[in-house]
Length: 332
Image 1 (tube, helix red, strand yellow):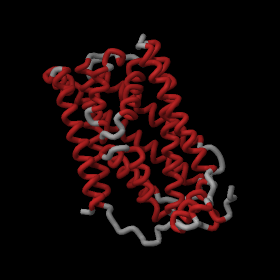
Image 2: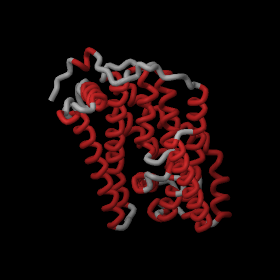
Image 3: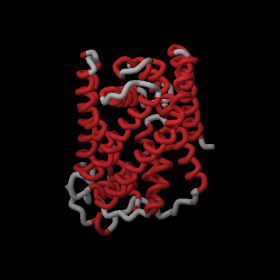
């Protein structure tokens, strides 16, 4: 084990320990017996929730497939499925999971489409995820006002919406319009070549990727549906406001506690704290968060299994090289 791998393992272990301790404290506050009873009652719904989470994973795969198509990259469907499952596992076990997920998928797919294209797809996907999250927060703001949530919470949701949209838009624009050649990088030829190849790959994007964004918005809509199913499973009354508020709390918590692997403990704490605006009891809200983590853990195990069963050496040709199409891309 290298020194870097040891540091990552220590960071993940520490984060999981912290999250586990937080879960214990939150469950104790909500009532251990009450939470256990609610979780047991909701177990028959887990198969449906597992399937919905699988559909969410599929939407990310279709978004990536759409992006590779627009960048004229050919990636086998099997490789995309493998990369998506492994990326999902990484997203839920490492701090700053979304960025780590996209970087992992780029590395896994590089032997098929080349590292410049996979890095470009990863960057665009990261930006579109932020924009899609901002889009789903728009109805969440309306739901917050309908649920008579505090003005502070409503403004927080609105601020999160604006912030995610701004960061996603800026990331996309900077990646697309960044100069392909920077004079002060001439002394670092490898870095200069990497930037030039990445910039050229980005310039192959013909227009704004509406289709990929649509898949990722659906990804968030399915999360709202998943939350609606779980809230109903734990005994809460059916409403559209509750799942939307739960989605808003989930996104705000994920941004605030991005350093916690999979938001373990953080999600339980956030749901328990805002149980009233979600339209349920603290025990029910904590149970929903626990059930989400149970389902996510199942898919994480699937991703780990795919990674271990499909391991093979990466070709040494996976480098930053310009294809003929990339070399002809205009330089700004």
